[in-house]
Length: 173
Image (cartoon, rainbow, N blue to C red; front, side):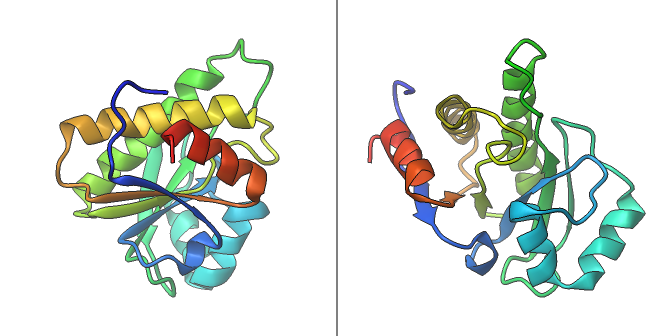
């Protein structure tokens, strides 16, 4: 846990596509194609125009971020970031995951977003261990918030009690 955690971070268990925030982060694949899990849910909720917009972008290398409009979502923007696949921890997975959070928040700021919601990037089919990913997520976001007062609210939107518990423990809630 970080020494001082910013009070602008919160945890929500539920559907990220329903959150009333300026931007939601899509745990995308590097090709920006509709997938399963969070990515599939976001594509279904945003509508077919999202897939067309993603195809025009072409791709998003692991650890980077790009954006589209929110289309049919409440969120004005969708920030796409491709998290790392877990290969045991020896392939800079931690650094790449931290970069996903940092790059997404920097892009959110550039878009004028004041509220952002993140899923638990890479913890699903990409296999990143939940506790380690949670620690990286919270520390990375906390570091950005320490230097940026324009971001008013960051929501870690999770699925399931285990993920909610991990984030609440890391945030000391």
